[in-house]
Amino acid sequence: MRVERLDLTRYGRFTDKSLSFAPPVPGGADLHIVYGPNEAGKSTLFSAWLDLLFGIPLRSRYDFLHPGPTMQIGGRLTHATGTLELRRLKRQNASLLDGHDAPVPDSVLQSALGGLSRDSYSAMFSLDDDMLEKGGDSILASRGDLGEMLFSASAGLAELAPRLEGLRADLDGFHRSGKRSGWLYDAKKQLANLDAQRRRMEVSASALQKLTREAAAAEQAWREARLREDAAQSELERLGNVDE
Image (cartoon, rainbow, N blue to C red):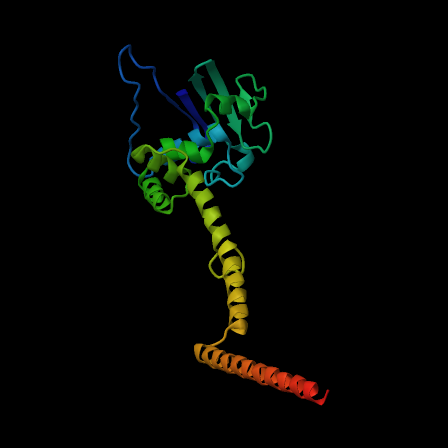
């Protein structure tokens, strides 16, 4: 998409101002540089462009001169399928109008933008010192559209943040610090129960040796008793035979 004209009709401190971007000469670069001193309105200009594409927020910092309902921006845009002459008003519904004041669905712009959200568009096309600093923080945290885009551009990786979020979800399922949930907590609890059962059934080495000695002595005593019983039984049978 290319902007050919941006109208700051009633926006910020601007009233009925317009900025045109001439098409490039054949073979030339399609590049325009907007410059000016501090407070000249460069940030206001870019904010107006974003508001034209995505809508004026309910709370805008640029309604100090023109009250909210009177705010208006516009422009002429070209894209692969044609040209759009648009105006944007500060409304909750039907805020986008064409050159004949007929409502235009926001899906028309979304289609031309390839479905980019405002945050994604800003991250890709409005990098300033503040955005780069936030992007660095996002990269370190591996979160957010800006962090993912910058990291992907530098490392050649795609869909980094969703994959990391999936890994974080798996990690939370395995173990959540300070929480009585998760696979690791359940496994540790089961292990503790098994250890308690083992302790209840556990016999010390010295006790086992004592029991083994007592069992051996008892078995020896039983064998000796059986021998005496067998001898007594034989003697009893012998005496019985003599009486007969």
